[in-house]
Image (cartoon, rainbow over all chains, first blue to last red; front, side):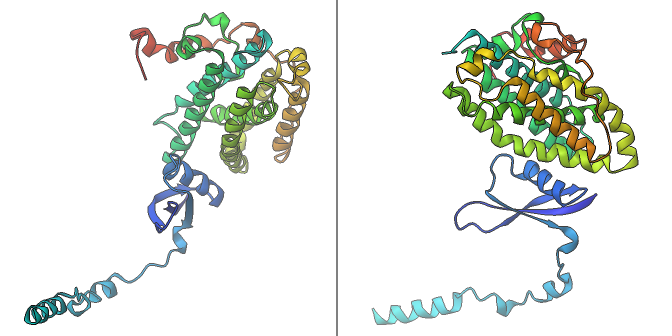
Length: 90
Length: 244
């Protein structure tokens, strides 16, 4: 048995999202099982089924290191500055 | 309105086949060979019960009475649909034989002069592609292994001839008034050819000439039917007015 990752997309602008995984002996059965496990109630109208071995997995350490405060600019400082400025004008 | 007595019999046969197969498939809920197959197989069971419901509703407003309230001799199910098949080999083989037959049978009804029946057939046929894809790919996969072949071949040889009973209804009047567009004899021929072809891929020669032992259409039930019927009527026997 091989493991496959299943992605579903609803109509419209929603992106594909991960629905779950299935075990199947081959690609054809993987599509069948994915449809039954995750799409039998029309949860989406498009489906991707990807063999897990084909998924590129990123380095977790690198991802943790990428979490730095200066990447998290939420515009707070600028917003305060603008509020202060517009307050002066009125 | 049911157009004729013959039409009533045809639809009742088909509905009873679907009811029995759906009920039998559902026996595997939670004990399927593995999780994914459990889900897929029992979802197909639900589809078959849905077909039964759609067909019964063409005949009567009281579907429960038709499905559960008749004497055993009033059912018209083909014996192959009644067999309990409590081992996976026979459950899988019966699933494939049944859905191959269903595809042929629905196809013969999609252009029926009975419009409601034709519409039901079109909806059901859309599901059949999936059922067949599921059954055939798993069957082929298993037949390709020594162990699978050892277990499946005897079951195929035993069950396949029973499938001829699917086509045992009389059809003269139904053909004359366009209710049925492919004769029972032609449907049977198509089904037999398709079954032989599938197993020929694996050098399994099925002897279809064997006289079918089933006589379900004439009211004689197989040995398994009583058990199956007890199971499917368990709830309604406790509470005849149960709603679900």
